[in-house]
Length: 236
Picture 1: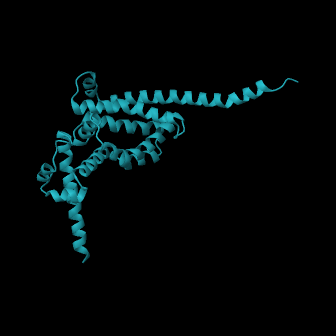
Picture 2 (picture 1 turned 45 degrees about the vertical axis):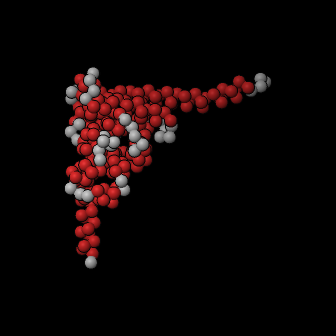
Picture 3 (picture 1 turned 135 degrees about the vertical axis):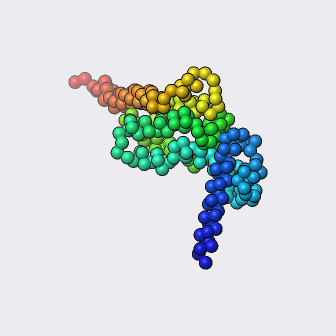
């Protein structure tokens, strides 16, 4: 009695995976609005009911594809292992940046193109990606930035640092997927190692500068009450 249930579950997982693998390239090529459930079902060799069964709707399928796309760029499991590893903080940050430059320069899969398309024209589906995939990654990345800069993980300065570091990587990803003309194309033709090293140097310099400023402001804040007390002390 147990064998048929195991077989059914396995078949269902295979069908779900096949739909996901077919939908990814189609969504990446034509976008969410122009990709129909009928086209996906035909390409995957399944009926329309299978899409609704496994994903609830075409919208649910797109959200699952979007999450899978970002997982292939940088997975939560890999990021968690990197953060918890004994690697120096700079090497952890280098790994993160290298994952993004690999997606931008390699661009040999639908996942990078789909994510870039969503960045260029964000939809309401981006919320699902943020809630289910990006938020946990942001927490881990802030830990790395905190280790490099010496700034506490909950300090707003680290959020600004994260935006500053991610922005050029995401710009290259969009330029690669959209074949945008200009200097970005010249950069994309450079060796990946050189590009990762360059972006890392800028990131480290920025983090260390913000870290020094944060430490100086913190020292000044501790010093000010002492000065005020001394200034207000009566003369004997």
